[in-house]
Length: 228
Length: 228
DNA sequence: CTTTTGTATTCTGTATGCAGCATTTTCTGT
DNA sequence: ACAGAAAATGCTGCATACAGAATACAAAAG
Image (cartoon, rainbow over all chains, first blue to last red; front, side, top):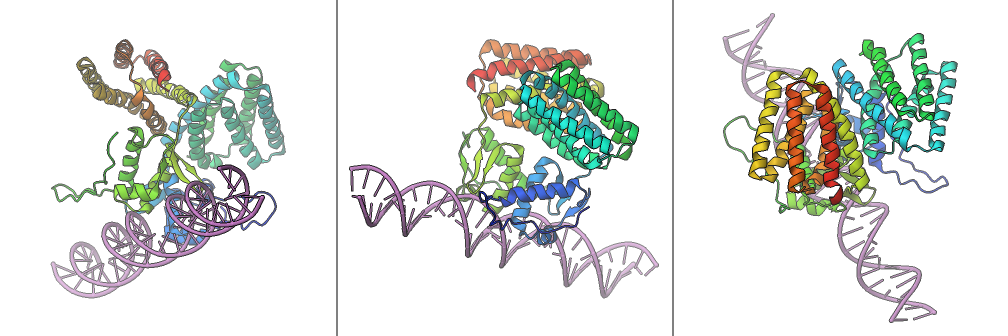
């Protein structure tokens, strides 16, 4: 839970190409993070005047960003009453995981067919780094690398639509997974599954990879169901 | 290709509860339709001043609607140069159909488990009506009922996330499918597949239903690939 | 004391205005 | 006549201003 701070407007001046900071994108990312990290908890009204002042932006671009997030499914638009952070029920989460599972199974199949050896090696590097973080007990970095690996496998599939849908669901779920802190034994199980994954990927065994990815997400549900 | 007309602002006055027509939603739907039906073809710039004047709306709500559609993937935001209608390559379409196929296979499985008999009967009604339209050679109504049936089956699955993802992809593809006018023999094949579908659904044969749905979309690709 | 109604305030929804960037047109030099 | 530069135009991006709806509060009636 961070404190709400004004957006950096990149007064820049530093070397390198002048970053054309499209305010819209910055705002969207910032708000998205605020929702994911719980600065804006479910049910909270997005107060345009107040929020805009805190972020140092006028209401116009803020409203545009909110509309964007509404389409992404993170906030809900209530006519004449603005926007509220969407609240997900346990069933919602389960439903999302079900779809995510199907998508990752597909990604696994496609990845085994489409990925280059070099690309697979990069995922392996991420995996090894994640295992190191696990052994070091660094939960946050582990978590981030975990997400990166799943995204990376989806990228390997080289299917833009798949990547889109996956990203949307992953974003919606981030808020939940962020909370779901599993115990040591479940954590170990998750790492073991990841090990199976990377081995299957390197062997380009699409049946196996698909199966492990599916199982992994089923177990993810078991891990978080209590906390939802 | 319709002519661009001002939005109806619902001056209402009629009986019944006064419909609170949220302008945002109206605008989004209207623009979406304009893109799907080809009034705004791929690559076209969405000129805020001009478009706003044609629709009888100021730039502010128009810009908000555009941001919403951008998140939906129908338009692309180019910094400092506004928004253009997104253009899809043949690979893009194929990728979308691949994902849609996977989603519908899942929907088929879930639908067989979750749907009530009454709900299935409603889909059957849509199907019969569609067959009637087919026999009458009414392409437009056939097409619309076809889409409705696919959406209806997804609804039967009672999985909001699945329905969301399906709707997004279906919308993106509408523009394409609208163009893809298959010949008589392919049309007949599509109807035959639909027949298999409804039979499998009524039998709650999830393996069969899933298989037919998948096959149907594979064939859909064959039907449209030439025109993309 | 509870309930209801009228009023005031606050917030959303929409329009307008201004500044900066991109593009196009025009002018100048070779 | 052609190439390059400079000015001009048009559009986007952001901020501000105004109107209408919703809510909260207070006062009065039951």
